[in-house]
Amino acid sequence: MNKIDQNPDYKQIYKFVSDKYSKTNHFGHGPFDETFYTLRVYETAKEIISLLKENIRVQQVLVACILHDIGKTKLIASKMFRGNNIMNSDEAYWEFKRHASLSVPIARRFLKQLRHSEEFIDEVSYLVENHNKRGDKMKERTLELKIIQDADLTADIGIEGFVRTFAYSGKNRAQSMIGSIRYIQKEDGTLDGNKINLDVSKKLYRREQDIQEKLAKEIYTKIDSDLF
Image (tube, rainbow, N blue to C red; front, side):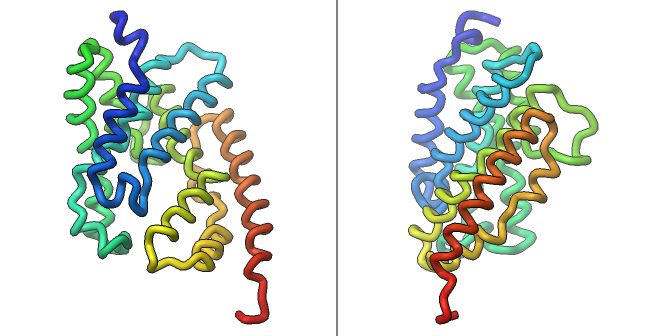
């Protein structure tokens, strides 16, 4: 790796991503605030890496965490959203699935501008392109890919699950505060937890799952009323 590969400017890369998101209606500071989620994936990956006693391409993983969802800025909103609500349709599903492949050319161009090596860019692109291929969709994964996949799932539960859900309800009048509380109570994360790759990640996931379940029980008492 060259010196730039060894010392990526994470803040500059995150600013690039945040600026891209800020120009979108849904993935900037709209109903789905990806700036917050990107930060949490990055920090969660750092925690997973700190628990592993193996050689890891840390720089590639962390850069990929920041860039992995940037392709969402290129999704066709009319295929996914009605107003601020994401549509429950095959068209919306398949449009969303394109975000990983759409992220790759954006990531490649920007990293080339920052003068990262071709080898480094190829490794980051592999992580970005495949971060959403879980379960049986890939027979073999590098350790680095397992880390980013686990961070991507773990970053969206626990306290973070509350923050994003209530941010959504606050910016989308179609979902009430009471609706958000009920949604959180139902979301226990078990399905996504079954897709975690690494043992250390499973422990982190269970920790966040426990936090979410305790908070859900506590907050549900606030609407435990005879008015319903």
